[in-house]
Amino acid sequence: MNSDFIVAVHALVFLNHKANETVSSEALAENICTNAARVRKVMAPLKRAGFVTTREGNVGGYRFAGDAAAINLRTVADILDIRFVQSNWHSGNIDMECLIASGMAAIMDDIFLDLDARCRERLEQIAIADIDHRIFGPGGVAELEEQLALAGATG
Image 1 (cartoon, rainbow, N blue to C red):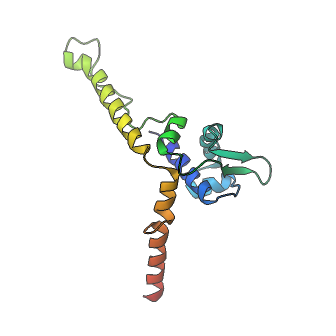
Image 2: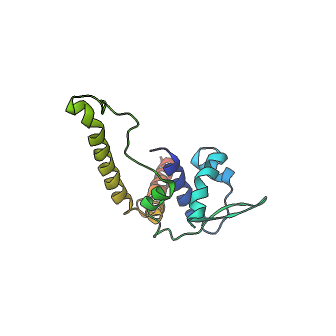
Image 3: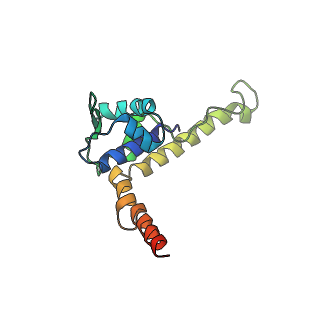
């Protein structure tokens, strides 16, 4: 897996949280901690999928256009053509007489495909709205930070 998936999910959650605001690629990049060119590259397929809209010009940028409860992480991964479990290296050699050496690569590829499919099944159960809720909902990151700030102010 490359980190494009992380950039995309972060951007969608941020844009969803910003509701009807248009956010520039530079502002997204600053929040994600990457560069604006990378954000634009990752956002292009999300725009084609209708998850975001864009506006050109000085006040241009991205706006969330989907239903945060309906956009699941598997769909995001599919749009970006992300594989979560894979290997670029194979042991053995298909031309060797040893059955282990000649067969291991195909068997490992099958295992990786199965693991990737299982990962996608789990990601299908997580929506952009779920992540937003984990940050801003009861017991979420925002509440925890508020509690820590209050504890620091009184301590």
